[in-house]
Length: 190
Ligand SMILES: NC(=O)c1ccc[n+]([C@@H]2O[C@H](COP(=O)([O-])OP(=O)(O)OC[C@H]3O[C@@H](n4cnc5c(N)ncnc54)[C@H](OP(=O)(O)O)[C@@H]3O)[C@@H](O)[C@H]2O)c1
Image (tube, rainbow, N blue to C red):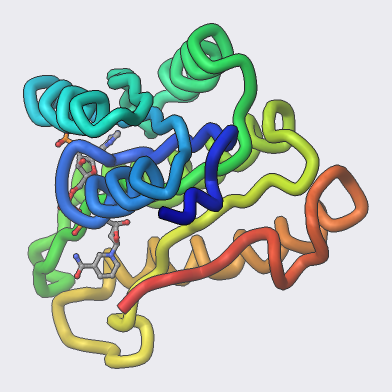
């Protein structure tokens, strides 16, 4: 079986469930050593690590709230301590609030931007410090941006910000240690 990610180390934020879990498992199948980041669901993350290890792969679960920069530093340092280097960052951690604007609270706004935008941005900042040459960062947008569905304004606002910071950082990373802009930071989503 082809293992194109052998010797690669990946951090997947929000990997205890959903898309992050699927990406982490697929990367492990392809030979990567995978860090399963989670916020609250330690049991889910540990089950995924166990499953990957049972299948002959390498994985580590690390708790970190991506909206907290000190937590992000712990996540990156734990990865270096355990695996020695980092090649790929997948910023999958995210939340989605759907409410008419009249019902959105300041707390909703701050939390959504803290996890989806601040978390993605400062994880990219740490990637600039830690990722090896030829590294990859994958950020997440959403098809909601094109659909402009009512009640999704807060979520879409965060993902619009993620798309633009991704384009900006692609240019910024290009002359450094990573690949040309269009290959560095991918915006993905349904
Ligand atoms: N699902 C879709 O249809 C869809 C479409 C387009 C884009 N996306 C984007 O794809 C990404 C994943 O979505 P999903 O639907 O797979 O999400 P999900 O199933 O709701 O899972 C969210 C994941 O993020 C983690 N998380 C939440 N807050 C966190 C925080 N503060 N720090 C660290 N981790 C945190 C959760 O950890 P715990 O389990 O520990 O809480 C969980 O692992 C998101 O960025 C989302 O916006 C999703």
